[in-house]
Length: 210
Image 1 (spheres, rainbow, N blue to C red):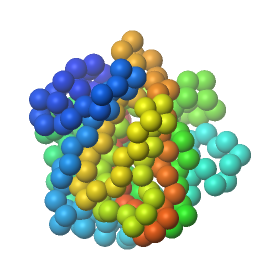
Image 2: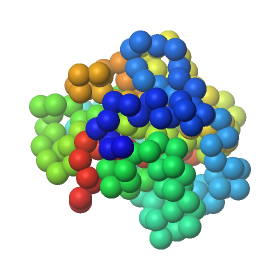
Image 3: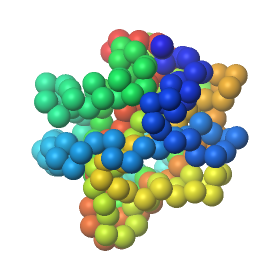
Image 4: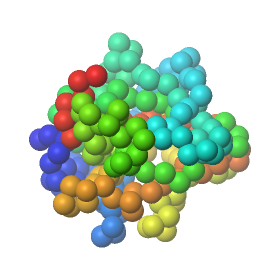
């Protein structure tokens, strides 16, 4: 299966993921996808390499994304294991995947409502999509519970997911005709107490190739 296949959600359901009932978005979840020990190892790597997060198309809001980010290398055993687990679950060819990223949110930090796809016609669309094409699927893993706040809110669905150790969310950023899906708009809500760690893996229409 390639990242351009529209049958990915059927494979994910067959392998134990639960689809969120909605005709608007292909959105699925699985609890305890990663063990607490694996999550702890990944959190340590994020703490080691974190840097301020950025966005592809600056919108004039300096507080739009206030988290920290890092790129994770498969040279680290915990990352290599995660890559293998995602490939086994999704059936998506790893060649279509971007490198895994880790994100860290301290108290007061957030990522305001956004979509993961690159806006067609946006300032940096050609720069980010010329080689591998548009983003297709997003896979996001929560690594720890948060004292308060820090949920992921899908406004158009009226649903907020709360961080749990090892819980996986994934969604298709496209519509059935291959266009981008604005109903995937989601908000990484402010952390009110504690620190939030997540992993994000994006897939593309074509092989990554960067």
